[in-house]
Image (cartoon, rainbow, N blue to C red; front, side):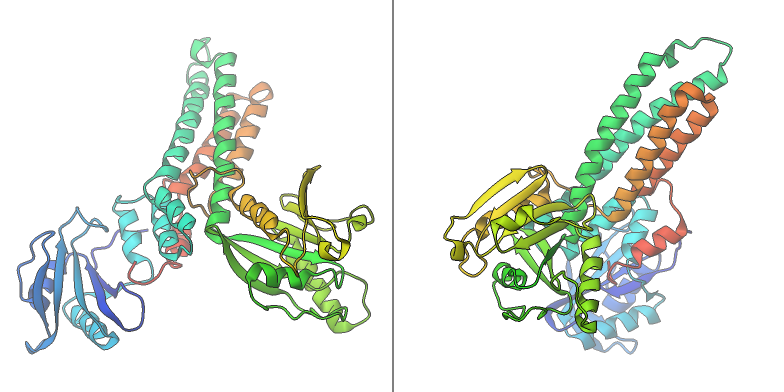
Length: 446
């Protein structure tokens, strides 16, 4: 992306009425706009109470003007913030006045984009700004703040440093192939590859957890008709979101409900009962249920009696990475207490959706599925970060395998691919299309 000297302007506060609204200006014409619009000579980092004037000198509003001189601003450029009364009419008038004085309306995310292009933030930190704005729980806020403060970026850079050391060792054998390079000894290379693999495993686990914290856990409830799937959704949601009847096939479509458990967001999907059906509408519901199951992070397989656990394939069609939970519902009818067990990678919870017995055990399981062993050090992440780390893993494995059978040039090429994949996370190596896709998802004014 090319750097630009154009001055941009946008409303930085949410749409609607409020006590205060903020208009943000950034670029080379900012000082001139401050003089014309506010009638002041801007002083860096000093709030000034002033009148905002139109072209004829009439007062549009009165408020605070804050000026941040380049490079000590969010974007790295001269930045002006106008804190006015939060009427949409007033804010729109201020934006139009700034445009008449040489600015143009900002694109979505353009302020954060300029912060990245001017070296104020790396790409992961810029994305964390959007994650922080969109956070829906305290855990998401803390995770986004850790990424914004550079926790994720520092761990990526530590891995880049190890890969760089590997490249140095390998390329030394290329440049000085006639000399037996002690620095490229096999034990040293094996140690560096092991160090890179260990860091990558840890980082990939944390990034996957970060994606779940950012996007929420996608939990799918499946089972035969009338085992209590919709009752379970209603119990977890705390309201009668799904219709519950004794008639098989009542649920015909996927019903989604977002809930927050101890700061962890989950999207629960109640699906049609899985069975063979000649009903065209119910059959379509079953097809959608299986499609929903294929992309689940967490599969809740509901049965209505303990004996059913041994009678069926509990998780047919569930994706391999998904966590599996078997739920024995209706324990109030069987007269058994709630319980939780772990066996062969499957968590089994006995509960009653109707009476609420055992729901706390299930909530603990759901929260654990999101944190996945995390202990308060989570950072926010996105799917593209996980994909980049997976490409890094593939390149490192290829480089290590090639070390014994291929020329050093091929090993070095694999290591360069790993370095490029890591660079995509923080923006060291990136494309204009990728940047456009990322920043276009931000809100205007940020």
